[in-house]
Length: 136
Image 1 (cartoon, rainbow, N blue to C red):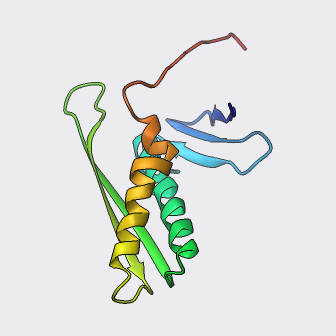
Image 2 (cartoon, rainbow, N blue to C red):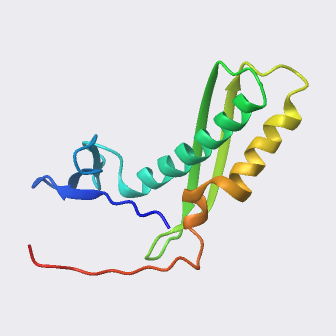
């Protein structure tokens, strides 16, 4: 089993935080979206990043030429709390692949969705969640 840890620190202003791996690059997270993405936007980015990396690596290994890739993710949220995402839609915008590479592209996306994307698979209902608090 591999363990990862990040720390999110409140900036002292509004709903703004910064976080990341201790000693590593810190990213802003802002519930008000003033200084960074909201937590839910960051979740969409995490899914896009995870699947984007998977698809990129699979296409590169399959020698599919790629000059640019955008991953657009949109999600519908429930009206009532906890206002979770009920639907996610991903669109890959790819530049470089030639006609005839469609099967490889579809296979790369399916492998990411069904097997490799750890962010997407973490969103499943069977996630074991533990929450603690300590006084600092």
